Structure formats: C-alpha cells, structure tokens
Length: 340
Image (cartoon, rainbow, N blue to C red; front, side, top):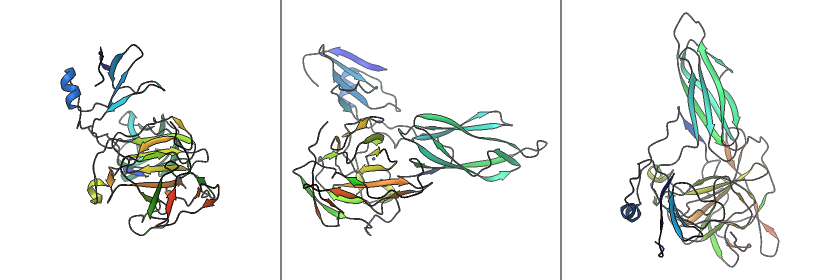
C-alpha cells in the first residue's frame, strides 16, 4: 500500500534456528519522526520500512513496497525485531492436524521435525524427519493422529532449521574476491580457526576484517541474495543482548555454498532479497552492529552439510591474479572496482 503521494520542488545481519512452533514477534517502530509528523501518517507497530523516491514527473512517493529495479530510492528506517524466515502453521482437524512450513528465505532451507512429550500419537511420515523446503514456498510436512482412536492424544513439536541445500561433502578450493574495493586495504583481526570469538562450526573459518564504519562492501562471488537484515542500529560486547542483532547479507551461490557479510551499518544494504548479484557488486556498508567490539566486517563462506551449518576455508584472489589463503594480522587489498 502506498502511504502518501505528493508533488514538491524540494527533496526532503547462520545460522540455524531452533524453536517450537514459531509466532513472529511484534515489530517495534523506532524512527519515522519527522516524516510521519510532516505527513500526518498513522503507522502501525508492525509497519515495514518506508521507501522514499521521486518519479520521472517529479512526484515524491512514500510507500511500504520496494520500488522497481533501477529506481533510485531512500529507506526510512523502522526499527523492528529480527525477522522470522520460517514459520510453521497448523491445518486440518483437532483429530487429524496437519503441519505446513513456509520458507521465506530466497534459497532452500532444511528442517527437522520431532515430537516430544508425546502421548498416544502417530505421525505420517514417522518423526523425527528431515525436509528440504524450496525458497518462498509452503510445504505440508506431517500429519498427526491418535495411535489408539478411542483415546485422546497430546504432543509438542520441535522444529530445527538450517539455511541451504544439504550437501554432505564439504566443498573445497573455492576462490573469492576480497569483499571491499580495489585501492583499499584492511587488516585481518581474526583469521581461520580464530580462538577469540570464532568458536563454533559456522564461524571456524570466518574472518574479521577491521574497517571504518561506512566502508563499501562488495559481493565476493556471483549469486542470489538469500537474506538481508539491516534494521539494527546498536552493537556491543554483551553477547546475550547483541548476539542476534548484527545486520547482514547472505548470498547463495551456484554450488550451494553461501557467503555471509555481517555487522553491517544500519539501513545500508543496496541489494534486494531474491536479486542476482555479481562479484564486485556493492551490496552494503560496513558497520558495528550486533555482538562486536569495534567496527569490522565478519565474513564467512558457509555450507549446510546436513542440519549443520559449517564454515569453509577459501582462497582470495590477489591483485596480480595469484591465489592466497588469508592469515590473521595480514593486510588485505581489494581487487575489484565496486559497481552497482
């Protein structure tokens, strides 16, 4: 729905998810102050970001729908909770419920369903079971009923998920472009198998690259934008408070691997979910959001090996075309001219 239209001459972000049946939390409005006041708009607490752009006739638009490809626009930030990308819902009857899952990622997701605290329950298929749900699709997963129809039944469902198609064999010899423009150089503060904060399989081979807030971040490889989070504006060293508050972009590649770019600046992402990107394309600006001790980019190549998200070692392309494995404390140099 378009919120306002008028004419004027003046311009005004792994990880797996583990949960019971998911109910998205309410979105919290943090910013819209001057814009809302000026337009007299009533914005519900669950509102999405507002996109502001001027059309070819000089008319300014404020809308909650992303403009068409190629349209220059600004985003008016609406603070909200981390978005839930998978959701489980129930259909059928009380005697024979059926559970369906919607995958809101722009790439496949693997899920595992299991029962606990189950009493007199039968399922089809038998649980626990794993499923792969395509992007932007809803899929029926399981039907339940009473093992003895003369008696009642009770249960609880647990859902686990990991982004990406499961590929049991770890992919090797991947070559990536450094994720910032040519002519710039930044140090690696934490390298492969770093012992500071990279102590889980999904970050074992991640890099922390120190850079100023606002540095252009480039796609390291061709792919499809699988997910975006850009609505957080705080960071700090309290993992409980900030652990899930890192703005990020996740890009899915043709071989099933994914690159992750995290701790990005507020509302700085310049690509859309589901859009195709090429190596060297500007996708966001670096920041200091989420669990972070200072401005840097957390960068990783990841793969789902079967209900487990792991990071993978990789090589960077050097300015002279030679390949190298990034090392802790090494100064990295950009090799690609950033483009949109």
